[in-house]
Amino acid sequence: MTITERDYSLAGPENQHAVDRGLSNAAWWRPPVDEDRLAELMARTNGRAARDTALWLALIVGLGVLGVVTWGSWWALPVFIAYGALYGGASDSRWHECGHGTAFRTDRVNTIVYYLASFMLWREPTLWRWSHYRHHTDTIIVGRDAEIVFPRPPKVRSLPLTFLHIVNAPRMLWRMIRHALGDIDADARDFIPESEHRRLIREDRIFVVVLAASAALSVVLWTPLPALLVGLPTIYGGWLVVFFGITQHAGLQEDVLDHRLNTRTVYMNPVFRFLYSNMNYHIEHHIFPAVPYHALPALHDEIKEYLAPALPSTTAAYRELLSAMRRQEHDTTYEIPDRGIPDIDSALPRPIDVGPIVPVESGTGRRVDLGAVTDVSVGQVRRVDLGEDTYALYRLGIDDVVLSDGLCTHGQAHLAEGHILDCTIECPKHNGRFDLRTGEPVRKPVKEPLHVYPCEVVDGRIVADLAVREDA
Ligand code: FES
View 1: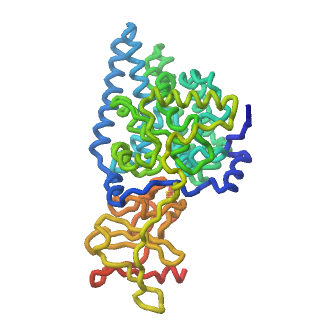
View 2: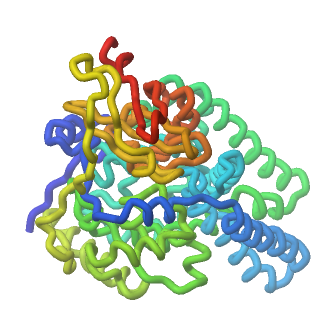
View 3: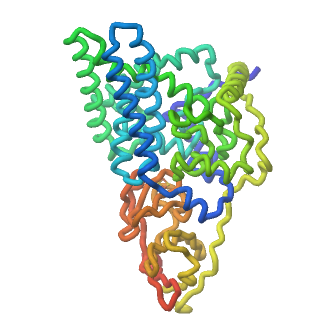
């Protein structure tokens, strides 16, 4: 029996320990995927998410009305159970997808749904946005990831309380109230930039006021209905968040840089997949967060040969995670074996073919020939390495080419693995975006601009001027 209690807080010593071991902001394993196919999978539309969101909201409104109509009879019980599950449960995956900005092509709609779902979940929008960036940077790295649900040793016997959401939800509400009062805790300060604190406080105040208004209306009208419709569903419907969410990482490895070891993909039925927005393909989502939820099954087909076989059902996932957690209760070093991951030793970041780089003005090193324009398809981005430096080359139109620095200014992600959306490049790691004309950040978490270089097509060749960078 080995019980080692670690400090999972972000303000404790494990944070620096993870950094010292190279586990923070590290390069993660990813499988090879054909670039054109990946670009197809990352494509955004509004239609699919509009249909799914409209159905979800229509069900909530319909059940809410039905709940009011049937109030006072036993029929109201199943109606409110279903209402709560859709309001306080299915909102989780909508929150998640819209937070990544991948659900809708129109990012403003992502933002609206993100805020609505945040309210339904009692999640502070700014806090959770930044917490989730960190979760993707340092997934299940102790001391770095604020979204580790089951610190070791896990308390299996308290799982029913987790499902009932009666411990976590009040904790989240209390944290929101404290933040609304300007008291931001140390963990939150670790991953939320100071420039975002005012926004955090302002949003939390609005959420607290609306929740208080719902509670006050219940008191004034002397009926629980207002609170049952707005506010309390977060608690009595929260079981669905736990039911799906627990399958993602519970019982799997900590402190590894391979999502196949710390994340689960589970085959689920179509109803579950609607409620959960395909997040059961969770390994795929973590490796390629720029792929929208509706394309995850297709992505799974592309890469499954590199993964362990997916768990065949939700029941199988629970069997695996409960068995692991029971053992970890008494032995915190216990790990589930590699679950049949093929050829795990080849788990290295994929190399990218950068193609030939030819200086145009030999000796000056200023203007460089990056190859025939026809070598890059319209709408495609390619990585270009020149000596120690790395760049990203975009072809936006027939003769419209752009060259930028290759690494995202927020982290170490190669933008050439990202997604061109209109005239922006979306980073593959946290879905931050840059305007490709100006290099200015247009979507969080990026805050620093990207350097964009003069680049043109001359006699069918792409020629870039790197002087600005060399002069810098
Ligand atoms: S590394 Fe975070 S948005 Fe690019």
